[in-house]
Image (tube, rainbow, N blue to C red; front, side):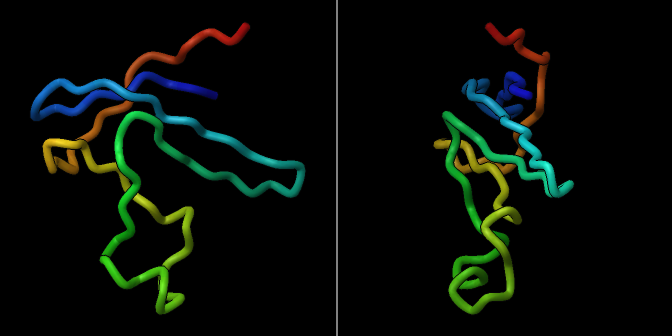
Length: 73
């Protein structure tokens, strides 16, 4: 599923993509905004998975809201 996303601070727009597989695993990723780990070294130290990424706008804000579901095809 693909949703609109926007920064509540500056209004920059992007997308949230929620995907899942046949094994029941799900993942959220972002387009148009940067994906940032919980802390800078968390993934390298194996204390966070890439799926634990959180969105960060180019203005530096971490306040990204998910908007309307986009129709596919």
